[in-house]
Length: 447
Image (cartoon, rainbow, N blue to C red; front, side, top):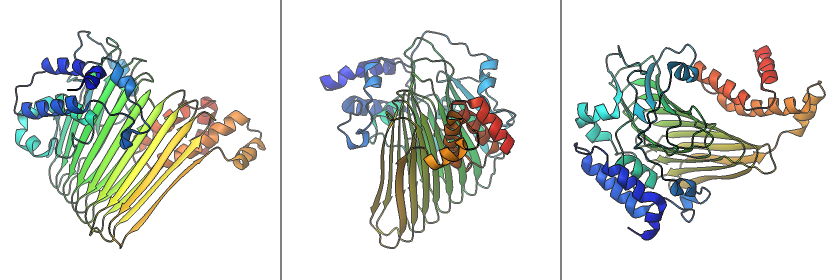
């Protein structure tokens, strides 16, 4: 272990690991992941994949998932961030620890398993041995290795073959000030059987302005003809750091619909890796990020077209204000003999401030010759013609700007078919705009 790595507060995580209960069948995998993290340390900007994102604020702080401070979150606080009137299966975590009291896991449909990862490690060893850590590679990111080292809390979901789960599964990760140095490492595993279908929501929400670190990893295995709609809503504290990783392996004719929404966090990194490993597999990735002040949000996506006749569609939109910065890096790799695939990628950004900055880099690597691939990126400001049009109809400039900003973001939100999420996101987006009350009144009138 180099002295440089030790200066990155790695010793702090080693001390936490030593306090971890690590005497089950997965103990060797945890230790191996920790050893890898000790060797590599945190990523730095000399690495191409982290060129535009400086994680030194995470390195320098001694975050810990071992805390002596008890945190109380009331039912009213939880209700305030739940979806209005949504009948759902719900898994609640408070500062990274599963809360059976606030979760709703009774009366699950036949063919559905939803449980805390710690319980799944005991109850579903055979299945977890087959899938856990098989799709998220610890060697790709030190943060993934760190997460694997601390696998305990998180959500395990198994949907049996030929099972359609009507109720969405809502996973709430709630954070509230404890001792000002909290680290959580949620690990989620979703295994979908053949011809199954489900909707899963991951929500990461800060209930105050605490400074903490969330390091989350989700793995998904889709069997042939399985369909998963996956929503990730990131509303961390504006003083918090969030590293998230979604890894998906898709079978024949399976379909993943991914919606990634980033509204909070001081420093945020979202990685999505989809592997289209059989003919007919399809992945749809939509993303929206809204930043202000000095926020930094980095979205990295990668799609591997491994087999012929696969389809990927990607649409990310960003709204940047203040001195904030965003990064979009979308890579599509068409592997040899993956003929007759389609891959479409688009990133559009709206800069509301002269000090806001976006680094966007859509990429294509194509090793087959019979393909349809497109990619593009745009960066601009509000349309002055549209602004003039609204001003000419007695709408003041600030309200006109907010309306146009809302319309830009809503082009992506309107693609969300799940009404409770779409409605909440519309409210959240409006809430971040000047003259929010007037915008709500205007949009209500239009509907």
